[in-house]
Image (cartoon, rainbow, N blue to C red; front, side, top):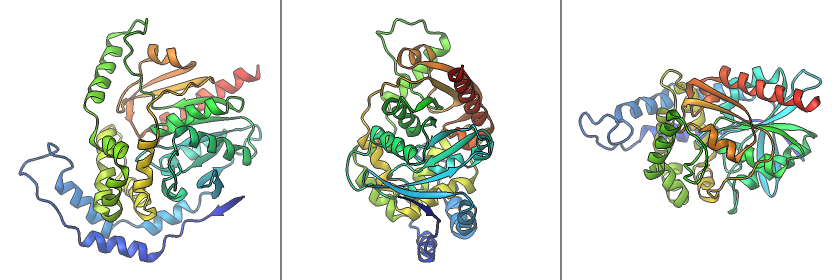
Length: 364
């Protein structure tokens, strides 16, 4: 059963958020610390005060409720999704999947341009936002991909594409693996390519530089990733109890992973943070880091890749081509990890180009 969904956060939850923010117990800070010890105190106080006194959740809630939203139960789990139909009678569908610490909100600015040519299905990953928390172990990218295949079947789509970044990229590639007869192609804007000494490929200087960056990242695992992968429940207590804790946990990622020339606005970021806070999904969203194994899912369908210069890592094409059937490759000088929010025009056009070319090729 598919049920229409409308966001309606209880006023008591909003009042509780404001009250907690007003009673924040702040740590001290070394004079002139900058970013050397973590997120700067003055900047966090600024964000928290605006969240408490200036940010209007109700206004954003009303705007989000203009989108056609639904829920359904798949594999014992509630799944929330946006479903926008294209006016094109011959349009195929795209399922767009977010990552962490994102949400379905990532795609707000690409809905209008993509819906001209595609039906759009934008789910919230189980454990995230309005899909609510998961209640059992094992919700990894493959299980989520199977849920997406079932969701698309219920919606009546026999052929569709998949797009995503961060965890959304892994889920999209896994969807191509579990439903190759339905998935016409997968487009990703995040595709880590690990160094492979056994690979008999010629790499350019820029390729080697990208691999050096990845080696440094692998040698110095980010603290957030280690905590969420090893002890998601432990960090979940702090993030679910303290709104400032939840705020800084996400705000630090936006600060470090975006292109300084295309930052995500405080307003949009706070809406994303509010979604995590008001649904109390900090711990359940973190479990995806714990439950997803570090293996590459074979994906037999055509793949398109968009590489953004300020992402956490940049893909190396010769290595990617050893693993996937790469049919489309774009490099962009602007944009970072949250491409759909930072440079929606660039991402939407690249997605359109890949899938329309893919469809035309299949129809010949």
